[in-house]
View (spheres, rainbow, N blue to C red):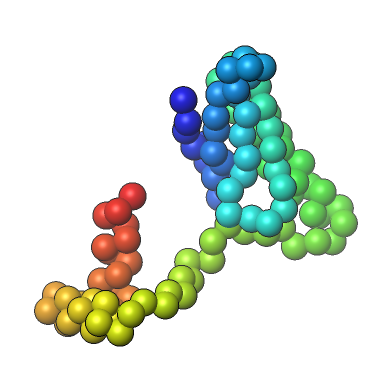
Length: 109
């Protein structure tokens, strides 16, 4: 079983470790390494919340800016023909390339 949890703007991937019979999770989208675990879903969720809270408290205590996952800026390099096609699709829909791409990417979730 794999799943994701969300809390205070952070998302984490969760997996079940059948060898140790526990749930383990890792916060996604930041370079700092935040992990957590639990024997039950309730324990896992509580440990995730505590891990994020601890990370934010530690950053505040050490005057470090906490990393935020994904800024919303996405830089892509695509072949020129793909770029031209996307621009044409955006224009055909009366949207900017950014608006069109954001909608297409949102549907891919």
